[in-house]
Image (cartoon, rainbow, N blue to C red; front, side):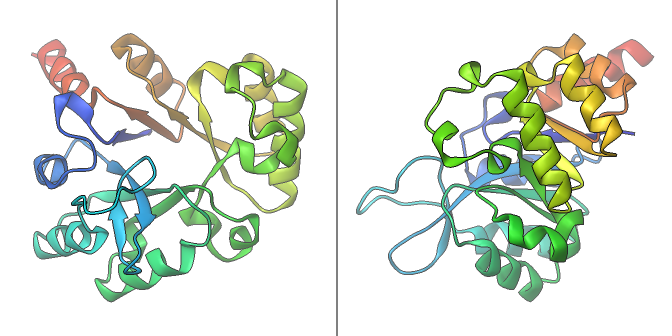
Length: 222
């Protein structure tokens, strides 16, 4: 059975906002939320996708964890790390709120953490590529580059590969099966595509239409 993750800003809610967190906190059919994580100058983990701006307010990751812990929600939290070196800080904060079992890391996660936390990491496929490819747009990554990255990440003990669904080709899928890898696909906004990936038992599907998809499924079941 696939996990369904609400991408930050799903269903028209503000990106990386408490409004987004609160809305999905009690939605039992939603497996997880994804938030973007950075560290500010005060060494506080905050939610934002792009470079932080001086004097601007950002939601603190601690407030997210505190709300989910207070509500005793089983919701998983995919922390997409937007800069390197945040792994231990996220772990420490999650552990403080007894939420580490519900936390998954993606983004700029160092491969060295795979041996320790493989079940908690949705390892971005680009983390298995040489640095020369990191500046390239994903559309220019050849299939051979993707397959080599899968092999490298598998050797590093990766279990779940986080990949743009447009790059999830038949060759990538078959290579993943050979290496006994699971896949987390982002960002799948076509409702029919989400349903098809669920039928394939893809490990995780991240979407900006999470609640719309659940509502459609309920209507079809009536």
